[in-house]
Length: 190
Ligand code: HEC
Ligand code: HEC
Image (cartoon, rainbow, N blue to C red; front, top):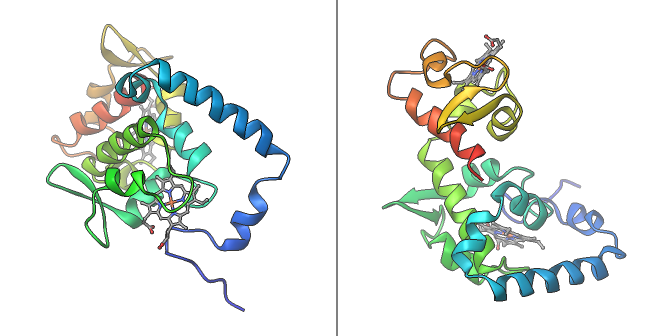
């Protein structure tokens, strides 16, 4: 029998059911309680800024959706008037996540993800098209090989100025270079 997908960004049901062993639920509850305490103590905005959207996606979304945030963005999301919306209905992602059918993210998590998806949709998946044939995901390349020195993006081991390096690398147009350089720098600012 063919596998039936709930929506094309959703994994088949059987995958969802086998992903989390029962024993983790107590731990999950404890983590949630700690999270609630943290959120109560700090403002949503501050928490969202310190949250790593990659980790949020992996821990809170990937079990049911595609493994990487980029893939979910590509298949289910759009950017309209500066906002992230659902491709199908045009509803804003923030509104949708507040009433997400199952295991809705906290407002801070939703904000961190919304910002992440927005930035991703803005770069138009350029990295995926022009860099992924040779490189790992942008977050991995940035965190392993790059660093910020006085706000300037440089090679951690080569000391290169990356914006200059990219002018002759990866077949980027002149106007794409700053977009990609900024996207890589953003991976290091949190
Ligand atoms: C327990 C499983 C589960 C988890 C965890 C989960 N989702 Fe979902 N998600 C669903 C289901 C089920 C739907 C509804 C699909 C439908 O009705 O078409 C859905 C729908 C969506 C949609 C609407 C677009 C689409 O593909 O249908 C988006 C966007 C979405 N989820 C994002 C997220 C994000 C972001 C997270 C992490 C914060 C998350 N989801 C966590 C199960 C889950
Ligand atoms: C055809 C394969 C290929 C493509 C496509 C490619 N790269 Fe590279 N990239 C390499 C190789 C090989 C190196 C290591 C050699 C070097 O440092 O000159 C490298 C090095 C890098 C470095 C490390 C620089 C440093 O000083 O440590 C960065 C950053 C980088 N690439 C970014 C990108 C980006 C962004 C894109 C897409 C626009 C891209 N690359 C496309 C092959 C590629």
